[in-house]
Length: 356
Figure (cartoon, rainbow, N blue to C red):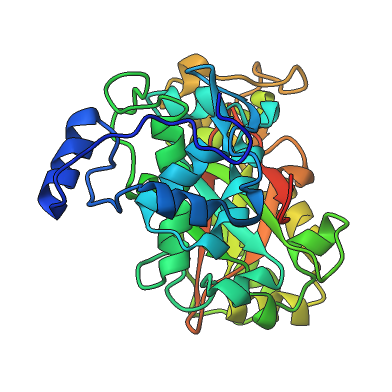
């Protein structure tokens, strides 16, 4: 345990050569395969910023390694990922979020399904830090997006112990496991942002974390009425391999990312975010006959109100409208997307602050 104001991690002397540092980190199994920034004592202290009064403070025990997620350990991984110190409060909030029991970190990160944690940022801090929620927000080109998302995954790897091939048993995983972070495009949304929906003031900042199995992009360039656009998005979910239809009994959730143009059309049709959720719940359904004996059927978890004796019973993709999260993100163009949820986890949120 470190003394107050002191760092407790052991110091390692490595020849002052970039290649030597990279090789050592890789040999220790601490990297995601990409080059890292050396976590020097000065860099870690600078990263801690206002959280540095006592670096040994733990946010709690993180699964599955049962390790203390201390501020110091989190800061080390933030440095390695290339974060700036001003990014650190977002990362702290994200780590606090994934440690909430309902997120079930070990369950969603250790399974063969290989879910990726997605960091979605709301509030003025997104613009202040340059967290992109506009054109290309799922992709490269923005340091805040890339490094915050990467730092969270390094914490999951190095502190929680989820190393691929060891505790992490993902069959394929997905590129989002390197990094997946973006902001809601509040400036182009016709609806209130998610942190306001959750009861925070417009001036507050918040992270939302969801664990996803895939990104399903849907292009709708033909119809222009909001309800018709929404219907296209719903129809895109209907397929026997779509795991959510088999996992509604576990509380499986979905996240819908609506591009600004589609959102404006839905709003013009009088649809609120709650209306969108209700429409999805009522219409994203498949017949039991089309699900039986396929995909995840052998491990299905359906509530008792699903009549399995009737082949025409309609199974919903989610158990209630509240199991759909709706965000507006992206730039120009008529491309929205589903972030397919993982049935053993729940979407979690945490306010971003400069103190614990």
